[in-house]
Amino acid sequence: MNGTQPSLDHPNTLSELSDNALQAILLEGVSRTFALTIPQLPDVLFPAVANAYLLCRIVDTIEDEVSLTVSQKRHFCTAFIDVVNTGEQGAEFALELAPLLSTQTIAAEHTLIKMIPRVITITHALDPKQRLALSECVATMAKGMPLFQAKDLSGGLATLGDMNDYCYYVAGCVGEMLAKLFCHYSPAINEHREQLLALSVSFGQGLQMTNILKDIWDDAERGVCWLPQDIFSETGFDLKTLTPATDDAHFREGLTHVISIAHQHLQDALTYTLLLPSHETGLRKFCLWAIGMALLTLKKIKQNLNFNHSSQVKITRKSVKATILTTNTLVRSNFLLQQLFNFAGRGLSTPDWQYVSTSVTAQSEQ
Image (cartoon, rainbow, N blue to C red; front, side):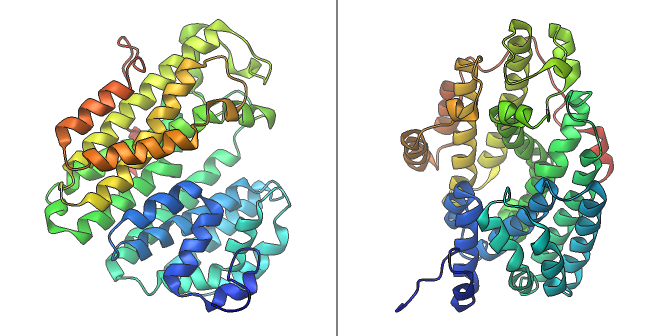
């Protein structure tokens, strides 16, 4: 292409791109991980999954925007559900929200908000069953996430059940949506629909808990904690006292239990992946790369329980490449993938600790 290459630095040129190219470049700006994994999916699934992630990222942007009040966040979340469902008022929604975004919101998300009309047009060009799965996910997320915005999160969440609920609204419902898309794509996968739907919630929770653990100190700097107090009460630590300067053995003991719970959820994620037909290598890679990177992150956290910044437990590019190479090599073998998971996850479980894999509240709303 001659002249200026379409990019997030030149948003006016984005209109020149095809739908797939546009979604790929938007993904690259807002999530390097998903920009890497989503293209591994079969061509017929890429448009829907890429679009789904962008829709969810729009809800995330609303929830994370520091300049918006709780009331404004509820307003925009409710309005966005209608935009996704009807395909209408996307331009008006973007024009209302875009000027309210602060400089703390990354430039790529500013661009994504401005591109909402095009993103919604892509949504409504999808297969009706795909579109239904996306709209249900957005509605669940946009209704659930604001419930936590009104809470005082300086002392963490009260219970593991509350954490399960939060993880469901942020990630579990996304896992359900993906399971529905995969089942719609393949009759063979659809034979395991109920089991996949159940495991998909745990899959999402494992990834989200890993992010929560990695970002503990970044969150603490802004007075937020997503950890469950009931677990830390058993080890004798009060999350209300958590600060970036915390150096406490009781806290680290509680942390090992949360790591163990996240690890068990990632085992569910692997079980989910191994239910997918071995010849569906693209789907398996999409899942395995995410599981592998999360597992290595948990390993790094466990080995550095006294870390005080997310950069200290961020896995290296070399580790990412090794995860991709190894899982790609073993992608068709259930036995070898389970052995690899067991080897990589050694030491992450606390044998005396059990967990409830899904939230009663979340399940009752399905």
